[in-house]
Image (cartoon, rainbow, N blue to C red):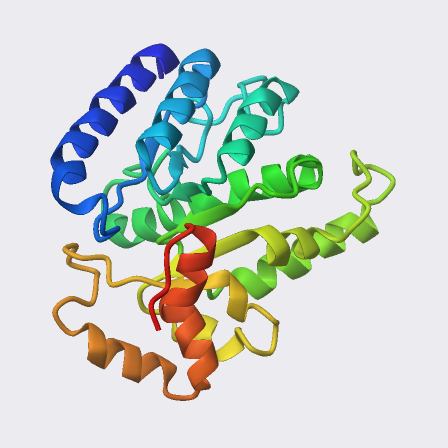
Length: 266
């Protein structure tokens, strides 16, 4: 919960990652860590974003809450104008920013029977939604059209519901909505956002119907136990047999290359 100390932890990890991977893998772009940023320390975050860009990191990862811990009224959130310099700095670097599941607060919120499933579903996977909605609804993506924002490991099955619900609130609650965005929230998502998944049959059944082919990315989540390695090829075939070759190519790599500025060899 101490944002300055949190940023110091992030700096230490980022330099460890750079020292470990840069000598062997940086130039051929095989292993590209994402720089961790504790946004609550705005001055520290600005300095670290500049350092990460200069060192060639592929992107930055922010916690799902600006300051670690439970939600409380008045706590600093990403819709606060104080973050405008940070959004400008990240946009200027060309690096995407990501929100990863289980960050921002302790996901181990429920104990007892069913706790493992409750915490995974309710306090880990869904936590990427709020920061993304804050970025869209407060006008951050309208003001920063080159900023790219992703939800990592969150899955994609909820995306049609999320986009429809944001658009519904934008229209039906217009008397209360500030700022009045010139476009629908779903337009900003489709233009500037993405989400990643490992196994998500529901999401893949809907990506074409809801025009989300360009906004989703598959990952094998190596080496975590909920990932698909070493059976990734079988996992891909099990989930994506119904998709066209062009759609599969985007989901399996081209979308990531576009969002993370990676070279594509054909």
